[in-house]
Length: 144
Image (cartoon, rainbow, N blue to C red; front, side):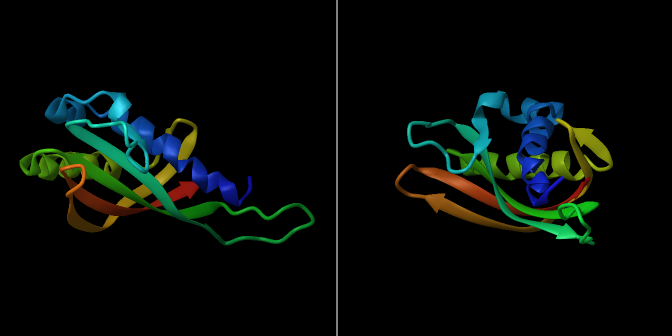
């Protein structure tokens, strides 16, 4: 595997969120509102979750005759929990965080996850599109 192996975390994020019953129950959302960033201009959902990969860092890289391989990748990514109603952003962010942090030591859409941790959170409001945003930054450990 190469350094790009960690980029497959997007598949795992999508799989974890679309298959999380508590998250679906609180929002009534379908998999169609979970997407890579940015939120499409034509989309105007009541709730949405977007994700973006910020960094993929191989750990313990060994140089051999073959290409570089690492048994572990530290992947930083950001999620945005979007809602037209501010009171929905808090439970949406909470359920999203719980779904991701509880998905440790498993394989999701062929990606081996060794843990996902919330690193930071912030809030924003998009005046042009009239929605609230909870921005969540995570760090994941992806195994080879």
